[in-house]
Length: 96
Ligand code: FES
Image 1 (tube, protein in one colour):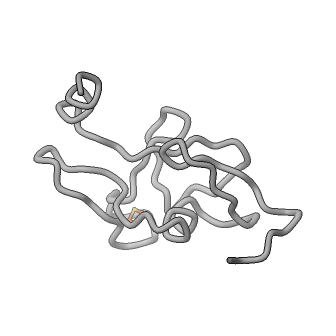
Image 2 (cartoon, rainbow, N blue to C red):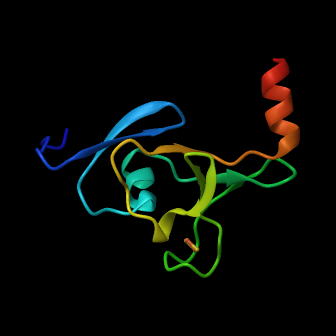
């Protein structure tokens, strides 16, 4: 397990608390947390980041309810990060 540093921040990823080093992108935080898919396509298939530099938009996640590219967004304390699900899957989860 990595050493915990004073400068680490805590964010949540799909409701789970995750400690991340200061200055890392959300994409790095997602990878460190073992999350390699950031959203689901309309047909429900997992989508993952491709470019790591802002061009492909495949790394979009919800950050405090707003869509952000995780490769261009620095992790900040208290951020709530969530996988983007199609409306159909969100409705199914609400009725499960
Ligand atoms: S990984 Fe391509 S835009 Fe973020």
